[in-house]
Image (cartoon, rainbow, N blue to C red; front, side, top):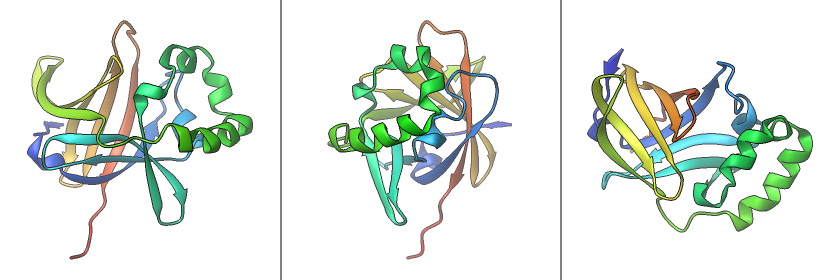
Length: 157
């Protein structure tokens, strides 16, 4: 797998969890996670959720109680959590980009990384090919990694 540069990330990406035994496996999908949007100014919408067939909402990760989410991960995969989250999406909407893109070292290689503004989280990216990225979410103080795949959404001009 090749390193990914910050410049090549610009655009909309659709995400999928790669099941690895992490407590959050399946949680984001249950809540309607769509993916991420990277902007040309190196800012990002870290968590985009589908709220209809053609509508995405950016959520502010700073609003999410991360320690509780990790502790009560089983609830996050439930139908009740999905209903509760559909209400919270209105309250947790982001007012703009909530993370920054920058080159950072991960496991001895420089690559693109997304640093969350209000959470101790960094997502690292490796390029699979021109339209797919492997993402690894690292939470400060937690030795486990959450793995996900991002696929570039091509837009017609």
